[in-house]
Image (cartoon, rainbow, N blue to C red):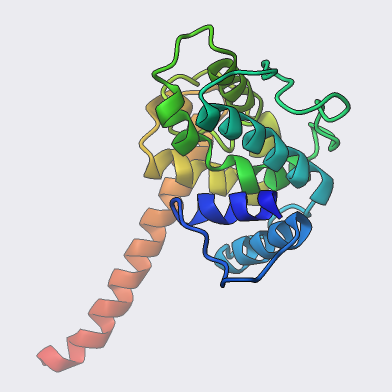
Length: 212
């Protein structure tokens, strides 16, 4: 399926990782991504909303297809997919929606890099920026997206940590200064410092006998 291959291509920087002849549905691909993300995160994450994840994939795919074809076609901000699929089916105030949408939209910064050279009024560029503003977890690191409402993300422990770690890793100072985010960043950094001190204390305790 084209959408499943599209997801795999995004994950491996332009190359389809599926063995020759092996097909995978979009739902299967998203469920596999959900499982992989959970294995890589020690904290509890929100539930998985397949409908929202599929919606996000279709949004991003439609815009990428328009970029590849070199034309805007029917793409418009907030409406890059056919009628009836414009709105995310998940509740915006539900952390599970943000987590599920992010499985595909986490690639927004990469996709936007070539689109950033388009004219500001180009519908494809505007559609990508609209997604980036609407889904702040996915757009960390995009210089064009600064003032966002991250309240839903910050309300969930697992998403908050994921968001803060992305801000730190991508050195996104504008996001770091957003309302409510500075305190979350400070808390995570304090945890990292405390953990580092614990590791050093264990290390010193182990090597001390050898010095005597």
